[in-house]
Image (cartoon, rainbow, N blue to C red; front, side, top):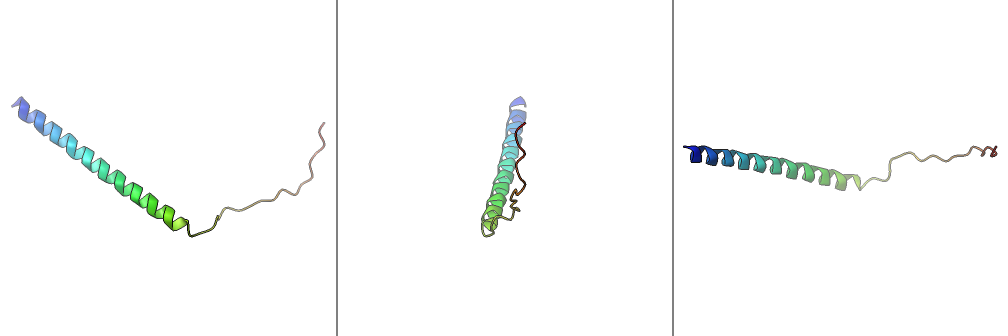
Length: 58
């Protein structure tokens, strides 16, 4: 009986590992797809030019 319970526990652990791996693969695929989509666009961050005069060192 203990062997059966041990095998059942191992089977449940294996199923959990497979589910977690499948979720991770889907997340990586979505991230890769988004990265490829965003490469079409230029850098959308604003650029600033500092035009103030420097203060003299005191």
